[in-house]
Length: 164
Image (cartoon, rainbow, N blue to C red; front, side):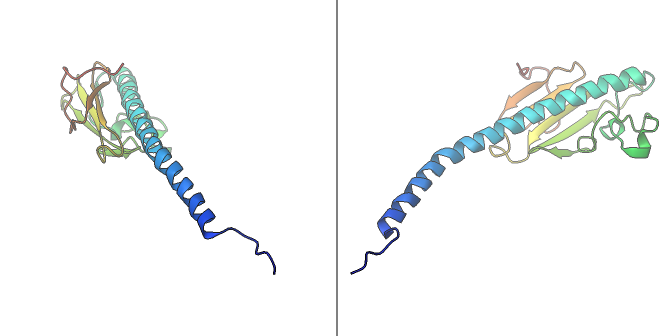
């Protein structure tokens, strides 16, 4: 009789079971890493908007802070030269309101005055507990603040905890 070559059904089932166990351990860690990356990107986006606002108000002191995110952005011919309507300080993704980026939705509120002396920017996870677990915000003092598990929906109270 010839000896058959190959794997038995039991051996294949054991290999599949081992792969499933490894996947069950690895997938939650990957999801947590993605949430951490999204949160880091959101805090960085808030910092970028704060920096753009300071640059805008320094460049256009008669205007003060920008009235919206679109006036901080601009591309191509709009940026030659930069103007009050297109400051060319933000990329095209962040320069829309509301701006979805990296699992977060950014919202901007100006104070409506000219010259503008205040603004609020906030970002909430698009899908809570999947794209992020914290909301971030800031206003004209440029301190990035966060709130765990509570959507800010455009508001940023000064009592919100600062990000370390």
